[in-house]
Image 1 (cartoon, rainbow, N blue to C red):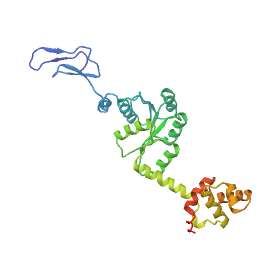
Image 2 (cartoon, helix red, strand yellow; image 1 turned 90 degrees about the vertical axis):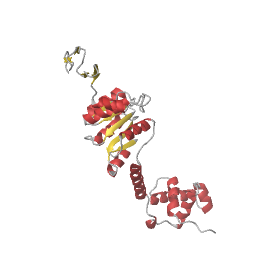
Image 3 (tube, rainbow, N blue to C red; image 1 turned 90 degrees about the horizontal axis):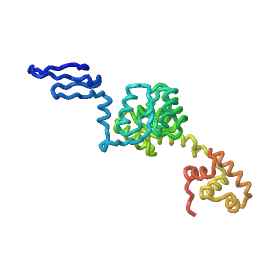
Image 4 (cartoon, helix red, strand yellow; image 1 turned 120 degrees about the vertical axis):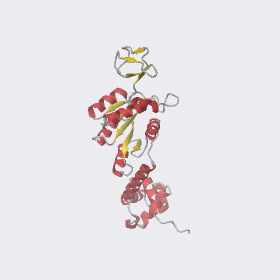
Length: 274
């Protein structure tokens, strides 16, 4: 019904005149005799996600949303705002990212990894705002390359494509509080990758050849002995011990005595009781 329209009662009785105060975003309900404001889909989202106590989980949080899909971007703005966050910043490319970071100094940045050039925008966002904590969205739970790449970039949380909006709100809340958050599937992938990298760095015990003296010194390093103590026990000069230690570190592919000692536990056989 437009501005200044008139509705006549079906029984032919008194007509109801709707004043010009009815705005384009309102509608007239003749059955009730009141003016109502139209609710957009985003308004309904806001009401649905309003916190029970009227505050919401994200009260006061400064959030930046990086997404090149305006519809999805607007939807996330509505949801995050309804949970009490400060009006979020939005970005979809480099210029908008710079402007948004300068405007709100975000505490949490949401990056939709389906956005064009998302990996580059992720790195740029972390360079522009190194104190911000990043949650990546739209990640597939079986995409090891993307999951590991995000971890290497330094993200603080993941929201998988299979997870819910409730999960996202929880993720933002926890990441803003300083936690790191990822699902069991993501954790399994990251742990597998760490294990693989460790295996690549450690030489295989089968192919490692150590002299008798090097084995003796490695056991002493494992026991926490200093160079002087090792020299005294083996009746050799301290500089000779240093040479042996240097040779050991090179063969083991490590850079410190502590790393060599830790590796000794995995490559040396247990000593026979005397």
